[in-house]
Picture 1 (cartoon, rainbow, N blue to C red):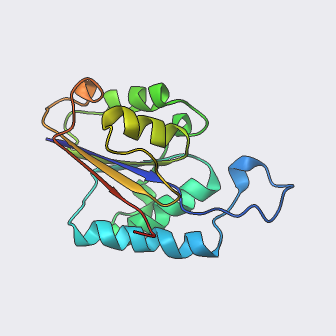
Picture 2 (picture 1 turned 120 degrees about the horizontal axis):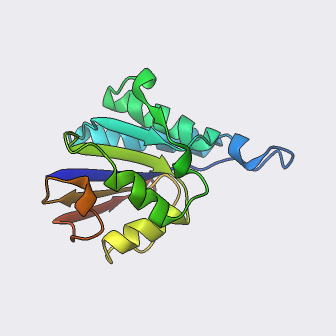
Length: 161
C-alpha cells in the first residue's frame, strides 16, 4: 500500500504587491489553518516517511507547520523545485520516481496543479481550497503505478470543513 498526501499551501498574503510570487508569506488565517490541518492528520495517525515541498515561502511555511504537528523534523523536509509552477504531469513525474521503500509521502504545493492532479487521481475531488489535504491510498508496491491505477481510497479535508 502506498499513501500519497497532497497539501495545498494555506492562505497566503497579497498585502505587499512588490513581493515576488515565491516570497509571499502566509496570512494570519493561513498561520492558523496549517497547524489545524496538521493536527487533523496527526489525529488520524498519518506519518509521512518523506515530506516534499515547493520552495515558495507560503508552501514551505505550510510544510513546516504541518510537520511540527506530525512530529516530523523540520530538517528532514525536502524542498523540491518541481513542485512550484509545474504541471500535474510534473507532479506525477516526482511521485513516480519515489523510492518504493517509502509507504507514505506528503507533497506541499499549489493550485491549479494540485487540484488537477487530485482530480486525475480521483473524480471525487473537484477542488482543493487553500489548506486542503487530499489523501490517496493505492494498493500497489510501486509509486510508478500512481496515475495508472485507481486509488483504493481518496479523502479530502480542508480547514472550513
